[in-house]
Length: 107
Image (cartoon, one colour):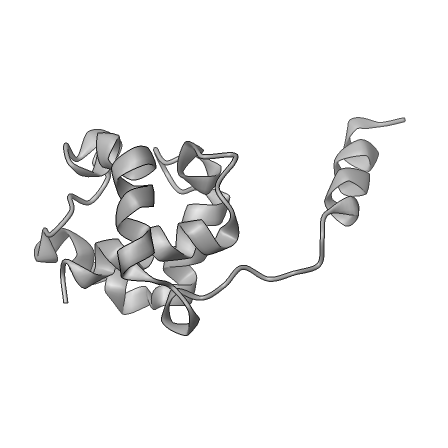
């Protein structure tokens, strides 16, 4: 079976649920723990272009895209950030919570 067919079959086998939007359920309090365990390594140091926690200037353009677009960047990966922020075991809700925590620091 061609690789493209295998990839498509794997994608079709995934659950058809959309990730939770940070504004519609992201819990900053719960997200702080996820951030501390999974996100801070890059976001505290600004590694690979990651916007630092609390750096309003670094987050400004990202915020303009909207929270749903930001969450999709986390889920799919963007530039130096791997898909799901490198946390394969994180649920969509945990990712939304972590994002909500990070956004709370710049609002």
